[in-house]
Length: 386
Image (cartoon, rainbow, N blue to C red):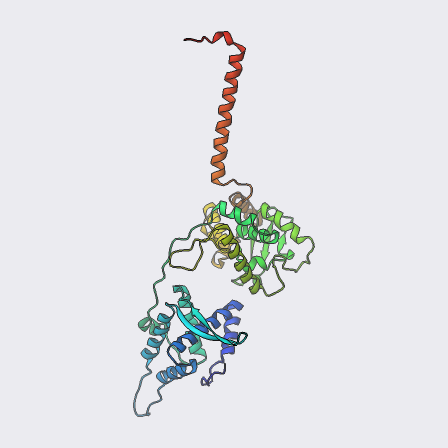
């Protein structure tokens, strides 16, 4: 869609390119475009186009009065309009859209956004106005006139061992290997999918993985480890692939596409297994593929502290102190943690209870057999009374 002259500001494509270069992430571009589509729906709800509402913002921002008359920019009017955009995102919005394939109009719903998403989308629209329309709003302006919904934070519910067992046992061979990597390394999903044979120090114990800067979200290289159970699942997949092949990906499409696909497939499995609980007033599921990283973080924090966990799962502020330890020391710390990350080798609590009951019954039966033997050996010593 062509856009109006923004007084030498960036084009929308130039703005998107700038965001992507700065973040080193294609996902940023996708989220920014989604933000602007939502803003377009807000404009449609106001019965104006994006160009028309931005032209009005520009007039309020730079009224160009008679040089002899001092007129200040009407920042309040701009911010109050954007406050309406924030309010718009807190509700579902129904609209119609033309489907060129079906050659007919379709009913659509723009679902209300979470508090976090509203803040993110607002930030992108504010950036667009600044860089493309030359309408520059300060943090103080937004704070004075725009009211954001309070973010409701419910306590996160941890994954349980019995859930992990069901998940990995119902996964395909390749996905089972992927899940073991996520659970025992603390990697992000995109990082795990980007792994090649070159990342693995397969002859070390524990097996160490070196992530290059370009593979990580923070663009800072780091190392992590995987458990022996994970190695057993990974090794067969590495046999017939080239050194630079991302062998955990399911398709040759982009890494971003594969991440989205894994999230979708996990959703199918979650429904199949009945793990469909959501957090209150949220679209977020309690059991999701990213919970595996949180599971690792919890186990690592309990074993060696939060700073250790943050270093392994990629919070860059903690890396420097962690890497002051020698390679042997880092490996030894993971070996201590590894016992808490085992899945197949550890029975769930219900099985432990069953095993305990069975053991008790077996002991009681053994005692009864011993009593019977003693009775058979000395029958005369037992007097039967009427």
